Length: 113
Image (tube, rainbow, N blue to C red):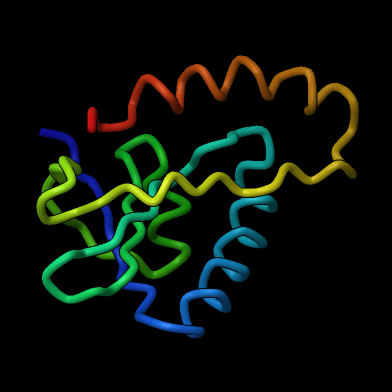
C-alpha cells in the first residue's frame, strides 16, 4: 500500500492563503505537474482538505501534510471541488512542452469520483 498525504487548509478565508502558499511551493518543486494535489471539502467538518498522491510525497511533506489512507472522494464524505492551479506562464518553453505529459500522469493517479 502506498502512502497518501493530507492536510486541512481550514475554513473560510484562511483557505485562500493556504492555497496561495501551496501553489507557490508546488510551482517551485514540481513546475511541470499540473495536478500535484486534490482539493476537497470535508462534508463532516466543512474544512478544505488537500490530498497528495504517493508520487507527490515530497511536495506533501514540504507543505507539512501528514500520512493518511487513500481517500475515498465519492461526494459523501469528501467532495472534490475541481480546483486546478493556474499555470505559471513564466516557465521556459521546454517545461511548458512537458506539461502535457505530466498532466496525463496526474490525471491517471487521481481517485475516481
